[in-house]
Image 1: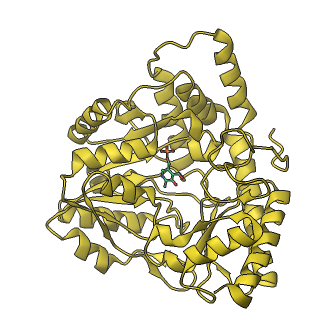
Image 2: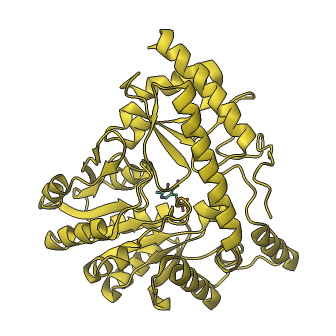
Amino acid sequence: MTDFDKIIDRRHTDSLKWDVADGELPMWVADMDFETAPCITEALAARVRRGVFGYENVPVEWRRSIQNWWKTRHGVDFSADWLCFATGVVPVITSCVKRLSNEGDNVCVMTPVYDIFFHSVENTGRHVLESPLHYDGETYSIDFADLERKLSHPLTTLLILCNPHNPVGRVWSKEDLAHVGELCFKHGVKVISDEIHCDLTEPGVNYTPFISASKICADISVTTISASKAFNIAGLQSAAAVVPDEHLRNVVIRALNSDEIAEPNSFACIAAMTAFDKGGEWLDNLRRYISDNRMRVGEFIGKELPSLKLARQQATYLLWVDCSAITDDSEKLCEHIRNTTGLYLNCGAKYRGNGNRFIRINIACPRATLEDGLARLKRGIESYSANGR
Ligand SMILES: Cc1ncc(COP(=O)(O)O)c(C=O)c1O
């Protein structure tokens, strides 16, 4: 069993997250400072010992592992042929944006949202059409009137949904999802539902897969899933597109193949299969650890940094912190915190919407690292409030 308190030195290991100056503490990109589940490391080691790393097929067991996990964990039956292997969620999204919309079209997203969605849209010559989520001072909800206005625009052809939603941490309800599906169907808009964070809900909170919200939702959507966030295996490049509709599925398969993102490396399927077949208990322990970290941050902020407020979240290990009492320029705030304390956070502005008043903190780290981060945060916020603005 993984010791989540164990500190692993990731400096100078070519880790994207830890490519920082000595003394800096990165709590930004969605990558955890924990070893993955031991069952995954053992399966990969056995694969390495085979010593031959030629071209690979996607094994039939890969489909079975995913089907079984989603059925037992998330109460949805995937048919085996709905599943298309891909080398990552972002590659699927970009590929689908290119196939399912035309240059110059609008792709709708609910902001603040995972910033790479903007890249997938804008780098391919489409426009991002934001439907800002409604923030009531504690949590976010979908502004359906605004969403329908955006979907009804004649050039809107695609919606990218994030469920659970990074960075605001909402797990959308079945009713919300069905309503989104209904509006998209009414206005001829296809949906990409990015569900990469679905296994990182708070203990006791279940997510609803978009395709199980209604028949319409299933018919008009491509869902992206992966073991990579929950099991910390992003570097192994393994994901899937789930497409129930046969016509849409064939379009997606063509897209993934012409973009050359449909073939696995030697470790991708083994890691995913082992995660889904044997990683359940490890994951539940991880979720409890993250939940305790979340509580600790809540308690710390309440006591030591009352000018900040944690948004109410039900998923992800990415805390969304309301700094509106001290700034509406989160970029400047994050720069100040990094320059004065070495703590590297994500500034909320890059997620657009009302993100300019928020910071995002990755709490998937050992408790001692978290305490270091909190102490730095306190120093950074206090000096910003005193003289940094
Ligand atoms: C919502 C969301 N989608 C996709 C990704 C990245 O997926 P991948 O590494 O499989 O491309 C992330 C990573 O943080 C994410 O938060």
